[in-house]
Amino acid sequence: MKPSLTTTILPADGTAAEAAADCLAGGGLIAFPTETVYGLGADATNARAVARLYEAKGRPSFNPLIAHVCDLKAAQDIARFDQRSLRLAETFWPGPLTLVLPKAPDCPVSDLATAGLDSIAVRVPAHPVAHDILRAFGRPVVAPSANISGHVSPTTAAHVFSDLAGRIDLIIDGGPVSVGVESTIVGGFEIPLLLRPGGLPREDIERVLGEPLGRITAETHATETSPLAPGMLASHYAPRTTVRLNAKHLDADEALLAFGPEEIPGGAAAMNLSPAGDLVEAAANLFSYLRALDTKGARTIAVMPVPDEGLGEAINDRLRRAAVPT
Ligand code: AMP
Ligand code: MG
Image 1 (tube, rainbow, N blue to C red):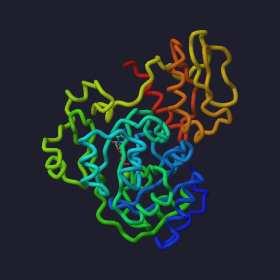
Image 2: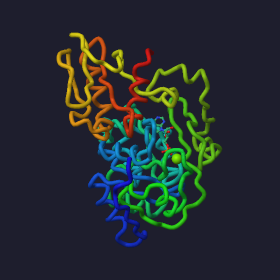
Image 3: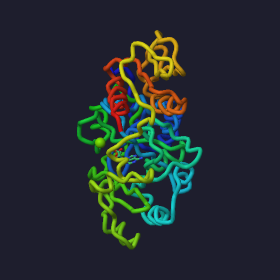
Image 4: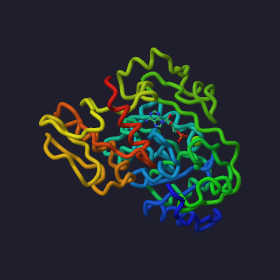
């Protein structure tokens, strides 16, 4: 992506949270301080805003993002808690603990933000500026670190500016944040598992649970019996229907995932990622269209070529994974 936006920097004072919330509501991208590092935030319920976020970071793949909310009640609108996860949330939130839980029914978070999974990663951050923004906005915000993919995580507004100027709308400058340790991620509550070590020590979590946290082993990877199985960290949403890439023609019993103005005619069903050939629009639609075509009873989902530039790289990465036989 060519830097083309004007990036405004605002000090984190009285009106900053409102300005940030307005920007998010308009589909904008904002960087803001959390207690771990500066996050790059987008409205988690707006697939187009989430697609712009991946584009701004230059990520070559879509990994699932953490939805940030202002309190436990807001978290319960998007995720289903059991007793153990509830105890952890009540003890450690706000703070550097992310819980991976089943999505709540009617969860409004976009399929792109969760990379098509039925689970969702959720956290209530402790930084007062993050908290004020989340409260003012009133919807979940996805917020990976505010740096170009592959660069180090930013701990000051100046770091963010040097990476993302011209690619995002707004930076809220709350001063330097504490050393950039990411949040600890816990999931798989049938067997609670440490999915990523981070700012909250494992021992503290185990003390509250009264049992040890499992580790991800080859064995736990293999048993994907529940949507909370840890295999979901390595594996990804894949349609049950076979996926065929670079389709140039279409058989009668195939469904078409099209891209661009020149759709292949025929087939059992068709959806177009972006008739205009816009890669941001295509990324925003990718997971929900794969899911929708998966329910059509077609033999194969035939996918038209998507250019391998900008967000197309991440789209193609995901399509290639979907096409690997399981
Ligand atoms: P971050 O880079 O700090 O934004 O953290 C994002 C990480 O959270 C991803 O790379 C995953 O490892 C993890 N994550 C997010 N959502 C899920 C999920 N539904 N299932 C498993 N892990 C997740
Ligand atoms: Mg990072």
